[in-house]
Length: 150
Image (cartoon, rainbow, N blue to C red):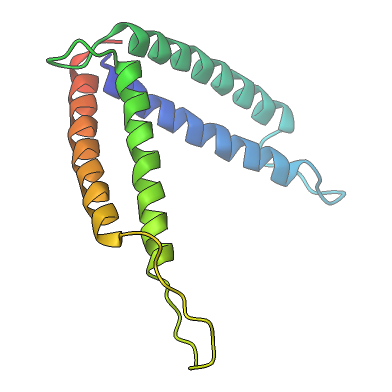
């Protein structure tokens, strides 16, 4: 199994866990005399089995990410994943700052005038540079995921 396939399976298992949890919570209290289509014991057992499978898969993925390197690079996947998160945080930071700076409200003549304290043009340039790095890194991570065996 390729790492990318394991990541897809992880996503599916996570969705199944969420659905099972919702089913259990929705049926934990029922009207007297009602009968469930599936027993609570079966739902709980299915949740526990799926959770165990999910946990084992996550451990395998994390171990592989800590051992494997990016395609055509000596950078570990785990390092690239954190770099990607760092770029996402920076992008979000600059984007939020630009949005806030561009929210100049019009007031009457007697109101206090608000002015920008940041150069939005420069921040936009930085944000675009980060976006490019993020796209390139994400593409490299995705390529590696389809090349690396779990």
